[in-house]
Length: 228
Image 1 (tube, one colour):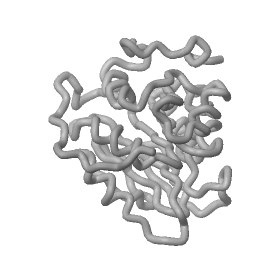
Image 2 (cartoon, helix red, strand yellow):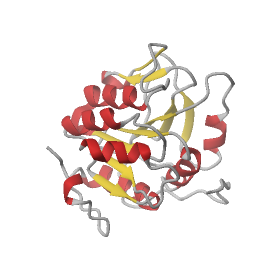
Image 3 (spheres, helix red, strand yellow):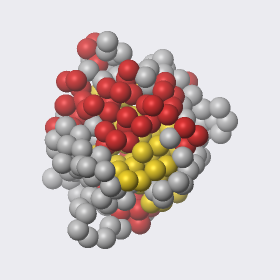
């Protein structure tokens, strides 16, 4: 099993990553079992100058306080904040769904939190976040499905795909639990399947060059490229 170790240093801002006019408006990320280790790697490999807002759902227990934002902030130069109802997404900031609340994003990057019923036994739900992002941002949505049990996120990934956004899924070899990526891939909503270490470089390339950017060295399976 993987172990979580604090990054000894933070990455410098990546040369060539623009601060204006990125190709996407939001990166939404979903994870569950094994997700903390995966997130530490992914977020640690993004520069503080990353020009797109990020929003995260990690399945959390509802019966205890969480220090997730404090933990993630140790591994990344990005700002890391709990989502607040009627707050706003911000570039270069990771907004995190709190325990026992669904996080949704609206037009203009406005956030909403609610305690509506569980989705696939989860609240917060990856599907709730992804579907709302697809509705609000359409083709300017980037979604990432990381390690986790169950099928939360599969319907949301398909919604992003149908809105002409791009969906990245962590591959089986690098996933501690492959259920969530596998379900999303099987439903036909995943654009690229990548090892964990390739996801942050892929995000950086996509926000710079757009959805049609070639991800050199990581050709997706034919069935995973722009499924219909």
